[in-house]
Amino acid sequence: MEAALFDLDGTLVNTEVRSRALWRMFLDDRGITYDETLLRRVMGRRGVDVVPEVLPGLDPEVVMEEIRSYYDHPDLPDIVPVPGAAELVSRVAEQGAPLALVTSAQRWWAVERLTEIGVVEVVRTIVSAEDVTVGKPDPAGYLMAADLLAVDPATCVVFEDSLAGIAAARAAGMTCVAVATTHHPDELSHADLVIPDMSGIDWPLTELPAV
Image (cartoon, rainbow, N blue to C red; front, top):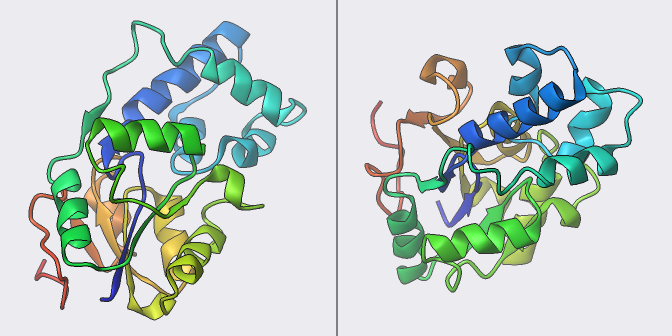
């Protein structure tokens, strides 16, 4: 593997429980009936892509702006690093390997989270929600990252936690390591490797560790 491409939420920082809570607050305040199936559909995807699917008739930008108004709510779970994630990113950078962040979040959110875990200076290539016309599970973001890094997609390993992200990585022709922070490991079997967190992964990743 020549290059490492990292998702953000659920992969480097454990924020997906927080994201579900945000959506619950919004839906409850709007009086919208929902179940966990709806909330699972938004994980790992851009809000503007999922709003037309889960809340047809509502303006995606208006919905996302309202959801963002809950970001500082005191009842939200804390944002915590995924074990081993920042260390792995740092090791990749120390080896001089190409690396990038590919996220369904907006760039400002990505920069803040990377700053919090101490790797913003080494992650110089970011593909965020604003950079693509269609988000995960479409492979556009990962293919854009490979192009920006000037590497063959086949030589990239992607670290992802969401079903949409894994599908995007596989559609891009990349190797995918799934981090089981958001979904049960059994749901992630379409990835090349499933791990509980990043603490057991080293770089360079010359071959996939035995499961």
